[in-house]
Length: 284
Image (cartoon, rainbow, N blue to C red; front, side):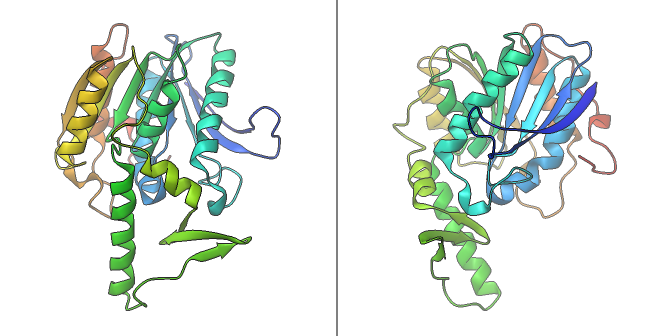
């Protein structure tokens, strides 16, 4: 396995630096997976899991690419510059660049929460993309934003702050403040479109991962039913309810092994990962 980190820019936009972490299998099986991140605190929570899973899949022959949306993580831009529609375009450009590097590989997407929904939206326009692995898709973007607002209100109440913060103004534009994460009207509109009636891909193979006490069952069931109308869909339930609920990262060995096992169950895939895939020191 070879690891590489670098900044990549979409064609014609050299000032927009996207941070990419590549886990390259040597030799490789020909399969290439791109991880698509969630947002807000959920991104921070999944970082160690993604790093361990990437190394586990890479050890079994798959090359894996992780990247940060522009305006988040180690990518360029400020938090208020994050834009869902632009991130959708970035995903398409990055997929094209990866295919060029790997000679037109059978690229697959592994998306978590918002990243899962963004991956589905992108898959609508990419006929060559055949497989998507989705961990707890939002399924209902409006509900997700409402939950974020409730958390913000609870945070302010617990810390004896004023009932609600006024809108944050940056460069003459108004943003909602989600405990330090600025949400523009454009991001809010995009997120609220995620859910019932949103465009869905057709002719793909999906594996939906859901924690036993994770995303609401109704939303998860509705999404599965909608996808199953024109796709091959399977569901995996994983008993890791503390993943989103605790401040300290949970033991990720079982979760990593279950995801790798699902990959293995598909033709030409991988063997289950071992607990050693996640480094004991938690490094990424």
